[in-house]
Image (cartoon, rainbow, N blue to C red; front, side, top):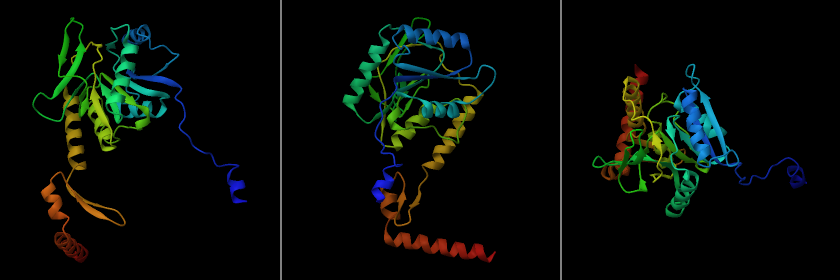
Length: 275
């Protein structure tokens, strides 16, 4: 009887087919420049049969910053792969659609756990950390590093995100900088990987390190410093000490040390109640 009743209103969830191959998303401040970008995508084969185009109109003021806007894109996108890009890029290779498809196939074969791809980024070391392949309006093509390259962050001019990874940006950063780092941090935390691939396009800007960039850098640094702090992590059943140091983890997770910490916290709580 119960099975018969449940079957009338319980929906059995199965993975659904994507409506589009790509969702191409842009925060727009200059419509003419955005139109040029669109034309380059269409001419390169990214037509509306396989793509949907989403935009947020910031031309008359900030309807949404990058973090809120991109989170909306990630939620609403119906494409298997979500391209988040600046309005000031141009696809200069008429075979860009085939090339991107080839790069995605290569990455899926190389590392099925990839979630984020870019055309520029940085690895987690200070020496020779940057990798990229990108063209500029003066005709120069900048190339650095061997591609594909696993990275800890990607540049924001062009980002490909796998929809099935269910990624999102942080809700407590805001602004228009460092979301390429934030999306990669979130991906790594969820067990995914990020890469810079060989996908050449033209970027009209060299970037702008202004006061808003400096403020965002401070916010991002403080945010991740706090999140990655050493601390005890507790559940209702188990707890453990979390840090990047194997020595600290070994010491702080011993029964004796945990007993000392617990006693100290009990004494501290009693003193606070006595005040």
